[in-house]
Image 1: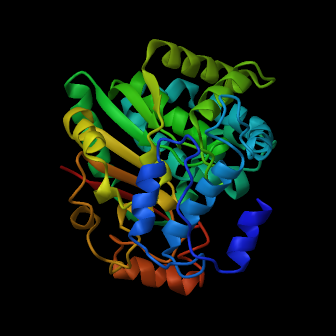
Image 2: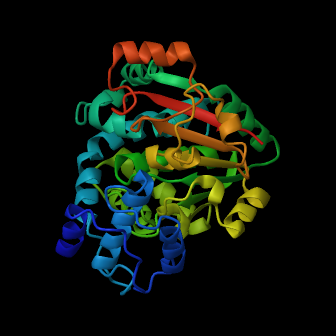
Length: 358
């Protein structure tokens, strides 16, 4: 890690990966060959970001042992522990709504604002979510921060999936901790309400961006909450554990999800799988949204459905803005956000619900 730090400080060229046992080495080196001479400070942002965490995985022998440590475990565990009371209140409020098809908009909103609920909108320990009025107030306030909202079209698609007996949803996961739990709540709702028979969680291949979720985090979070001190959270987590055991919740960790490829450069096998089996692909997080846009500065009002017309299945992006790019936002919305908040593109206070239908 010291050697890696020295490379970055010296603005060294991005070096090919040595063979460390990872099944992504060949793909990484082919990708690096597309950027000859690029250094840590000159390479495209996504490339250097993802490459950094791949080098951390190499430095800590992630692929060299079945028992290799996740160097970010401590921070992930602390994040989950600090969210326990909030999750308990959320579980108490949402339990009766999980099987209700009319509550889909609620669970989409919870999944979108997961991190904000944990950090600012939702005072942990105050039992805010136990009050229906306060709970709805939190979500109403968050709706005012939406710069694009395709929720009505998403609800129509979910109803179509219910009408045919339930489909397959692919959920491209972002952060562990509270946000992963809100993703699990959304998945539970989709299955319990009949929209999905199976939710396939697409998780990271190795520790990435400190907080990104791995398969072990999905199972670890479920086990921790199911055996924890918060009864409402434990009941919901037990339902998740049953979904995992039945196969209704499945995890997949293709290398692609931890690489800086634009989403239109999806491996053909994965693309074919999604095209032939997926009824909806839900993409979480800012980095994944940037990949959906190819990390390119599209006009902010360019229609999302046109930008992402390449998607192999209906594509839903739930994103809070943390990078200076985007699309599908009406000029009057972005102008109002800019007038209200000079850092609106990067501070995570504003969100979008984008759907590209097939």
